[in-house]
Length: 121
Figure 1 (cartoon, rainbow, N blue to C red):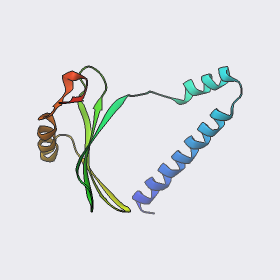
Figure 2: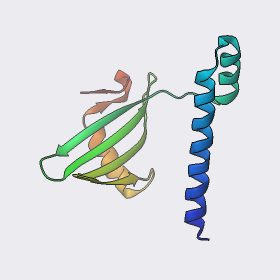
Figure 3: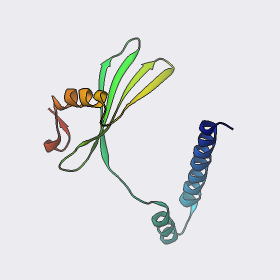
């Protein structure tokens, strides 16, 4: 079997397993037990903000998606470019450290101020 197919199957099984766990958790009537199980399920919780810069719609739509931390120095942690054409969507991850990242980063930083807790200027 192709490695990609194995990973897809593994990812789907993981999703199904976690969803089943959430369904069981939400069905619990004992809230103390529910909270105990919840503490065992969740490793961490990260809060971030997402900015969606739309470059155009009406036919295909083009978006730059920017994820930032939510703290006082809200650094850009990920970016992607999305192409939407009716029922088709393609996401192009922008890899940190590449020339593409540097170009998009410079573009975003021309109007994004991380010292203002992730506000657009």
